[in-house]
Image (cartoon, rainbow over the protein chains, first blue to last red):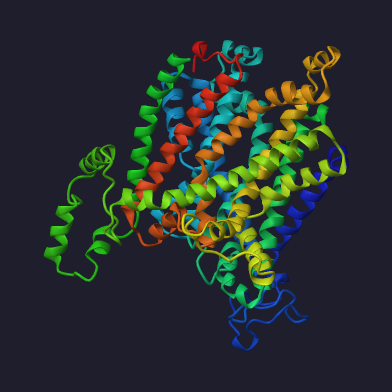
Length: 275
Length: 318
């Protein structure tokens, strides 16, 4: 609690994340309208008391689409980071602990993945698997793998020869137990920070993929998709349809970045001293 | 140093091969039959089979890979399925436009980051520092397609200062070219400016606490000379890495920016080719951007060694 009270970034970031989580979980209860319900008589209405964020060209309520859109953004953020974390940390633990050929092969594969610019790789994988939100999650997860592998491997190398690990090996502890019970808890902090910042990156990547038509497909409410769809009305100054989902992406990414930064400062004693 | 460069080049070979394998697999995994796109209106099965044979798509995948790689190494990246134009020609026609946009954004980003980042570090906790720190978080959180749309709305549609998009050839109309460059360059530069500014500020803050700066001041050097000659020189080392990697990843940022602003560069070609399932073009763009990213990573490492004599690559074990 001391950490939370003395870190305004945690308070601000955490509060926005909680609001987003609430929006995503309670969308069916709090969204004023059905997000895909077409009502031509209400089309292109500016923000008013009936439709707080206005309506789009099909008369769909923008606020309801933003609220439901949080489900897609947060689930992609969490699931793709989960994929990247699980695969990346496993490979990093194996490469760092076993060393030798396993390390060499794993790190060359990671180098090959790192050679691709991130968004281009995500676009290529999603295009190859087919434009669907599930495939976007897989693509973003794969792109995230190298960051977790390199971080984990580096941390394992620094912990592997410490006395308590040598002691565990000496008394004949099972390698799986050594890795999971002794090494992993000692390297978890930077991974938590990376995962928090990773959610921000994943939300941004999903929005970009959906903007390009490779993520969520219409009529699903997705922030990136809605910005792209509504951008055609900008020349008529129908700005509200793009403004609301854009602000939602910004706030979500901002919150996870803020939280990740605060966690990094709090968990790294060197940064804590200089802050 | 030469030994290090040679070893790195040798290590790049298996990684580059893996990269080509991934690129080939990604395109071959894609749904749909590319030959049907090439065949267009032709639906005669015999004619389609003949085309498949002509393009070698009836051969086993490993043979197709070897054939594709051999041709790629000779500079033959195939022909676009949509336009029949040689892929290399399609890319080289658009590359200068992407480079113009990318380098304009990079120049903007580096200039702002160096000036504002340095002032923010030297005047720590001042109002400017707080604004700069806020911008570093906001800048990386703002999706560039959203920023681009806001800029179009405000500066092109409402204020009518800049055109909303498109490209004008520099040689025929330099003023129009630069006018059309402003909004996409700002859009592309914003996120990298935030990252660079943060790096400049934190690198300089790290260096400012070092004892050799106190020594420099103690021997009577002026503050300007201490900052520029001693602090900046050392603070630049980690900054160079970030700048170098950003040059390698120019295309990544350009993909979305070029799409929003109808900028006819390689990024837009990539998006159009993916939408049109123009596999040879997609394959070539992904391959070229991955290899250029690898080259820039190597260049950064070499520059690193040159900037910091303490780094001895000859004795590195990995």
